[in-house]
Image 1 (cartoon, rainbow, N blue to C red):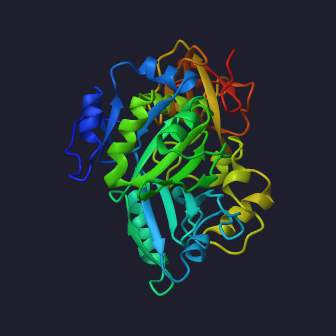
Image 2: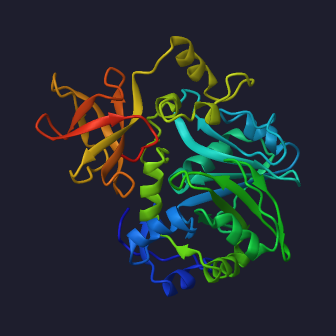
Length: 371
């Protein structure tokens, strides 16, 4: 993430509010985001102990509607949208015919028949092109709704109570990816459960852009502390959740990331019908293993390594993987990272970082555990 400030879209009503809160801006995939609000440690504690609020400008959104939008999306993703219960969104991989990732997506089948698809901003262009090629207009129409539908996150132990107080409606204890559609004034919200922020209870609120500033102000006034992208990344890494654009890329076969992160059941259905890329996923499942896994790395007081830093086998000196995401972890009290490691070095083993003489890192299961 760069510190370079770029021009925000004219429709971004939240920017003055973020500035007023003291935001220092950076960018993610060409979009301006709040990097921090002057005290990253306090922002982290807000999510762990109270409630933090975030403008999720690092995400992008698509709307699909028409004759059968759910079936069209269903055929493009690794999970079973058509069998999802009402009010249960799904998480999935969107794949090329060769099984490589276009995006990881959250998909919500709304009560009015529309489908909302949430993706990382790094996947915006790829998803747009994939829909252009793969969604027949006679069955579904689609649009990039990123500037039409804002995404405000509220995370932490007090998040549910604060959100319910602001919108004047009960917010249920939503499981991950489950959602509700409460009415707030003249706006119908989509409130989705998430655990990405350090596994704390959290909610992603999709709100018409014209009402986003009002929602942000009300949550802030109710006691939610603004939280920047930096603190959210630390919490995400602690939770062991891969992010598209850094841990998941077009090079990734989904099972490499999802199996060891405990996300296979959440992301992939092995009983649904055909979908793009299914043949590769099934073939790997029948083989019984992949050659590498996304693992946790504990580096002690070593500095955070850059993405793509090589991981070296401590005995053979051979390169056996690479780092993806890294941060200092308040939970662990040291540096942690996510990275791909060949399957012969599992949890309980160790690797060297950068070179055969580099810092030693313990390989651990995900998510990270204190102590």
